[in-house]
Length: 280
Ligand SMILES: [Zn+2]
Image (cartoon, rainbow, N blue to C red; front, side, top):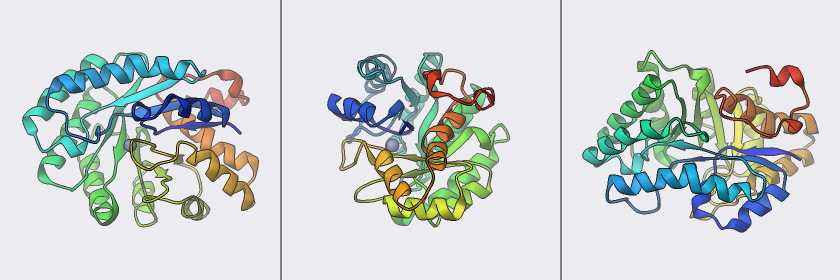
């Protein structure tokens, strides 16, 4: 089995997780910027975090042969302080040329507040001006449907947004069709306690297909499982999905989406179909 983990917060995981993921068939890891579990008190905290994501973490992953990529932003949980948000937005462009930076993310909404929407719009504008791809976080539980609608409105309002270069993550049964119908990519997050179980994810895949979908574990400092993607692949196999269909979902789909950024390169021995490789 081979797979790409397109959403993992490795800065809060132990090094053994890299070893375990590599052994399970992981070929690359992507790490969106997120909330640290506490509010950072100044822009300097973000500067150091962006250095960690672009310098230190790729070196840690490389020990296990894993290419490490990242996305940069201020998390919606930290958007209430507009002065700090402006300061962080101002330093992001200086990091965008770094070799493992894929785009702006994970931006989005948490409580669907006015300030969160304002900071989301600023991030979208920044991404468009710098021709960056976008990774979106959608709110949890009862805020998810409304938040997803608000996020889609913000994206549609900006004429520079190309939906094929935006992924909206943490979709569930009641939001996946909103996202796909609007032409965006959708991410399903597998979590032991909240978000999606493997069974629910596979139900959605069977209903909506896998054209513009990826799976991720979004492992972080909370209760989460860095092996959620390969475990779900085993469950797909048990339910009769072919090896080809599983490979398309957990390896080729993330490669197709992320490969829209020429910086996303992984070991091409893993790429067997030349026409597939020439796609982007
Ligand atoms: Zn995340």
